[in-house]
Amino acid sequence: MQSQPDPQAPRPESPEARADRNLAELLQELRVVQTGVQIVFAFLLGAAFTSRFPQLSTFQHGSYVVTLLLTVVAAVILATPVALHRGLFHRGLKSRIVALSALLAQVGLVFLAMALNAAVLLLMDVVLGRTAAIAITAITVTLFAGLWFVLPWAIRRP
Image 1 (cartoon, rainbow, N blue to C red):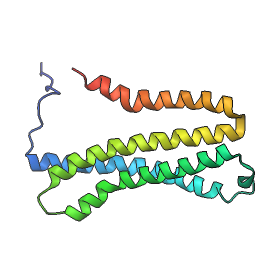
Image 2: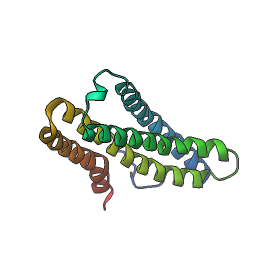
Image 3: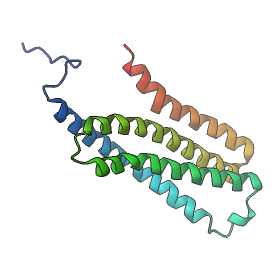
């Protein structure tokens, strides 16, 4: 009977190979997330040019602006690892790039979660009214917090 490898044991790879693998994995994750940001941003850009947009309340206009800006900030932060990699390519800094990029990815996810929840608040306020919008947004905030932040934290705890 063969024994299973220890999942906690380090992979047999050099620090350089590990940094290469970690950066490739991180950039692939960011590609997936960036697509979502682009879709939300495109929706928001189009929404401002609809015939109903001028009829929105002051709260809804404010929500729109906040949502759009949160989406832009999320896009900038989530694209920064690519810019770091391009700007520091072949400078022997890959481990530092990976560490900073991982932090930026976490911060970017926070801004993306805020942007998506702000979009839910805006849309639900227009469609269902303020009370329903707040209730539904509270649910989506809980889902994001639980699945994106609490679950990974709970799993990585010893």
